Image (cartoon, rainbow, N blue to C red):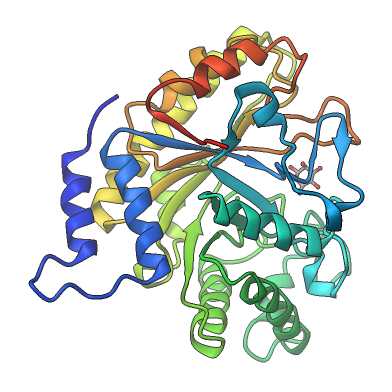
Length: 362
Ligand code: BMA
């Protein structure tokens, strides 16, 4: 894999090279660690909801569980380096998230993972504050407007932000947070056709300002992660600004649809390489980290997806980490990492054993 000289210069800038070296905050340490991966041509591997359930198991007595089970570990012998969770449901003060993960367990798993040397990241699929529907309810294009400034839902929305911030604060560890994701497409209420670019930026900045300034939560790396099938112009049109973002991400999946797996794989690689090409240019220009914030092929029908698709498409770019989506325990075909006994297992293991793919040793 390529090494990235320019990024190493950026990492030095981020470290401060003067004689009086400033004390590194946990956030700085995480930034430098991620820059370190990218500049060495390494990519950390992540998995959503790992440690709390897998393809055919789910933790129940989690208070008394050591959290040592993981589909990724069953296959590769190691934990993923990055552990992703979703906050959806926290805004209503619910005990479990939208996929049934108790927030108490999420906290315990995130803390345990960081203690073991891993990195945690949070996405958020909050309900629709105007209609009462879910994050995918796109029946109104007035939702973002309704939570901004003196909009009719702005008071209630402040409470939603407070609950999300309370949870992140309660973790006591640095996190990567990527709210308002896949915002160029129009499948979430904050999506491209549902609000103006200005309104989207205000939503993102308002979230950042509340967490950072009102609450003093400064150990957060903010990730901006549109769906990667957009143009660089569309990507930047809604960008909240350098002050509010630490990592440039993209969410890009392989979809088989009605065609063959082979065709889907070729399309995926082309799309991913295209997106990572412009993301690399943007990351240099804006001096930001970059990541593949979500990816995967549902049900992994390609036995060599890891080494023949994902790896060749991303390996020549300074991607600090890649995260594959969750292995649902209650939807048999909804998984994005291999599990013990699945035919794609050997290929995922081979991928995880590559020198430049970084997982977390037990
Ligand atoms: C989607 C699917 C859903 C899930 C949502 C939030 O991509 O996995 O089943 O509810 O993410 O985690």
